[in-house]
Length: 278
Image (cartoon, rainbow, N blue to C red):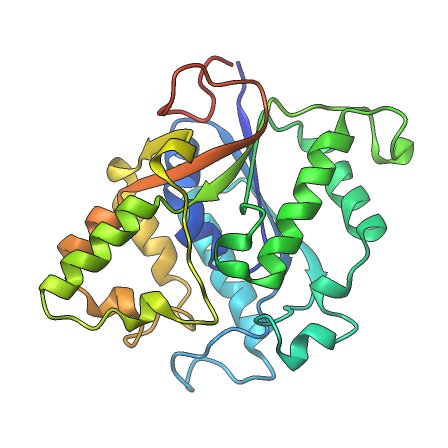
């Protein structure tokens, strides 16, 4: 079976931190991996003023994602070209070009066309809550779910190509118990963990019972790290993950978690493979 995976995310760096290990592991095993990014991340951070300005950050982050995608082994990177909407409640939300301002009837057919062309067996995106409530994360999750369900319906978007139904749609997940264990361990070391409790980034995570796939990415951990480090504007020396002990960060990064959002059941869970039984 020729396996194809399609990841749909909102900003450059979402792919590396959310599912970088999965993308790298499958790509290294011969799976065709495609990535759609809906914005250029214009509202992101600038870790070092020498790297970018507010005016050219989108272009810089585009180059960073292109580098990260190459490291991960992504076959094709597609940009939808919307503008980063910024965090919830910010002025950027109201920009007419912002992704959150895009209408469903504009975004969904574009995603459907890609799915019908690429014929992915598995699609990966954010959970409906956007990991921590980011408007663009929520939007790309909503649009991806709609596109997956519509792609196999010949009555919908007939101009977007022959129907194709992905086997499964997965949401990236943060296992609550793992997240809390990491925070407790860092506190025990006397380190500041306030970055994990930012009110503008409320990470709730998923319970152990909600997790459907526990994916071991230890064999590609260095590849995942290199891809994350390609996002230099977002991952500077002040980033919490850059300050914490490497062994603690590695313990957190070597496993990725997913919940099944739609499609064929996995059987016993947690599974260790997004393609289990296909």
